[in-house]
Figure (cartoon, helix red, strand yellow):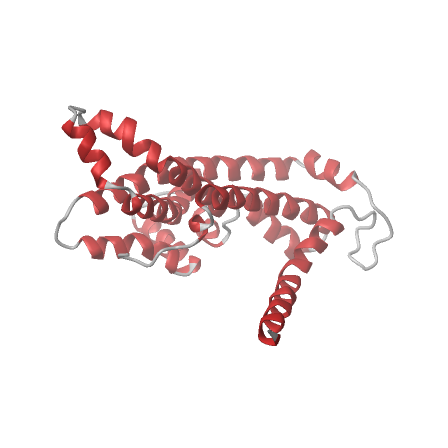
Length: 265
């Protein structure tokens, strides 16, 4: 009994330690003063209006949305196709390929960023929005792949066999049987992929060139230290945009989408 009580208290303390700084960011976003001190002197919405009127912030937001949505779309196609290839077919080296798909998510972001930057430099490819998209797709694809392949492995093959025995062709089996069964995993994978892409800073640093996404804008503004109120507003927005898709994905999959299966499982 005492062990259970102690573990609950310990878990509560850890959650307070983790989430108190996040809560403070939201509180400071409404601070009337541009100095971060506690207690805050009052609450205001002025910083939200000033942040939205900042053209640099709007450009960074636009670029983050473009890169995130495009990378998510590409990751859906590539990750889903890879999941079907690994699950439905038996061929030499299948487990190695499965490991390679998971590897970009397991590697530190700085390793992926430096590798991509070296590849683009070697190929003479100028850094642009598309290089950001390529960088983000490398790890977003892993999330989609993990979700789809896990769902395919829990799908009863007898349903597909029965549909084919009744005369359904491959396309109709996919449309009427497979797609409805894996639809929640695809949506969950897309949500998680977009959340990862939207707040990714390390890979973006090496693939963005002179362009700023929201995470890069935050990093630059904090380094200068002159626009902390706007930083608090932008960080609050990024946290919300990141958390909401994760919660939706967890809801769709019962929490399973937030876990990364081991390679080859």
